[in-house]
Length: 543
Image: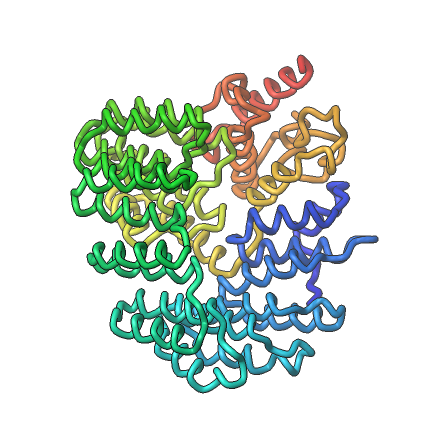
């Protein structure tokens, strides 16, 4: 699978990085959505002296490639793993899951059937893996057909039946779920806590919470104590049905029964209070969580923010956001909600502040987060900044939705900026062919900023001597090379400055240089580029 060396390979060769299994696994995992770009890094790492890929690295890479349907390369990796005697049950379960998720049911079944050929005889775990992959991809009928045909070969266990019960619950087909549950009991396979939890969840999602409670009563009678998950399902369901008293009663019952309350249960209770707009009770729950040492998560934050924004209490939502980011890490949904909120209030500057805070935390925005701000900029008529953001989005390997790109396209046509539209289309075409991105390359360097890779005293890895080979760093490091003429070089300046702006270790450098994240650096005159390089060198000297 060797290829001619790309710019990425050359840059990595010149970086002086010494790879290790932990570093490679971390990079692949963090950029598993980057597809072929991540694969080029994977290939490069595999060719380094005294290094061998771990099974985990192979598995993560297989998952990444399967996401973009590069199945030929997936099987190439399987063959390499076979030659190294690294294949195991999980390898094939991953491939089955990915095929099933892509609705390639026949291929998922084929993967199970060829396991023996690869020297990994399928066992009950692999059988469960196939059934689970099919059920989770809404192919429960096919899963049931396979189960009926192979249950003599693989003696089902409680997990096997639980997988099918959950599949029929998602269908949803309550009679069939009950039938499998009865078959399980009739076959002498006792339901375990997971099975009971699935049954309670199925009934509650179908709006039959009383039948779910009956399951819990039956569990108690059989000496099987309900878990926090089961209580959270009941509390959440009562909340949806506006039965706030029942939700509180269930919570108190859980505490009396000595079941430890976890964040999922608290989230269910918070959701119940938010549903009936009892936000003062929500804050009391947050205080109780703090007193009991239960740390809120992003889900906690999102439940409250979503409810407050839905009620038009946007100022209170921002207050909660500022408080919550001190005690939990926001996720993509958190940032997207806040950016959308400020854009809807026509407060673009606040939306940008949320965006800049997110970037300072080195959080990689999702497609929806990018789209929220791009759409807000379009609504505000700021086409230039929307274009810069869209370009950054593409450079990160994210394809904009048709709606978002369509809106920007119409605005560009209206302003007669067909040249910019053509440029963005070219970028999208490059993304479709999985060409390398120097912006992603720099993101890798941020990930690898650890004692395992860098000298402990190194403050600014981007301008260390090991990086002299990178053109975009050279042009900033060397004032004489800042005399740019080619458009692609200007793009490299933009990428460098944006990474500098978004990196935690460089926080505040944008102020030193006097730049704004939304400036279109490609349009900077050469004198300004040279001036930025001068200020950067002065700042570096002071460090």
